[in-house]
Length: 312
Picture 1: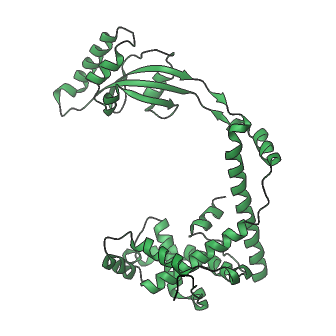
Picture 2: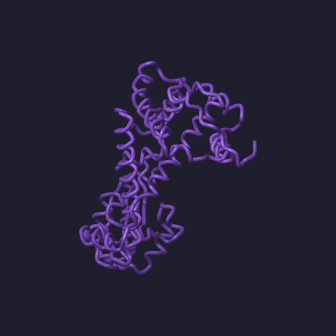
């Protein structure tokens, strides 16, 4: 069969055990349980409703008129199988793991074909979404101005003396004495800070003369965050304790919070609105399918596209 050919869908898989097995595996992976063979009866029973919902939704989409002319090249299916196989050290490990999950390669291949079909159809449906206009973008910007700000940032350096009771020189008392000595050498000035950081700091940043770079609120340990954002530009802190040890902070520069204008935010707004329009278009289409088919409860999520839909 040539690479341009397509593999025929097998309708019996709509209710087939290998299809359900694959959806069980996807549900297990989402729950952090990578091997169905290691699960007990109760764990499998807990996963089954989600797997059946996912399988039902997949079957619903694959029975839609749009499925009739959605073709998946055999080469793409081969690629999908190869991507899964590539996660294993050897082909035998791949085969063994499939067996441990109640699957073989032909079953995996059919399941991946269905998944690719599903995703292709959903992409086609999403393509029907209305175009986002600049009016839409500006309206969103005006209604959500609070989202478009650049928070205050502080460019900082630090010197760290760690606390580690396994070493006498790093006992809490000794570490405090050492950081106090370094602080005294600074004499309240930032002159010589970089050299002292390179010489005394026990943080890997010592190699960069203590540079922490631009820091936003909440990125550091709470005690350091509070101390840094209380300093003026150019200010040096008193020794501050964190879970790592004792620090001296130098606030080199302050970049105040600033508003982002529409031109800067436009691309991000367009992407967000476009993604939302795509999800809404898919949801509406699925609701229409369910209405026509009388499918109840087929709203689970296992594939990436389904997770996106459920995620709002």
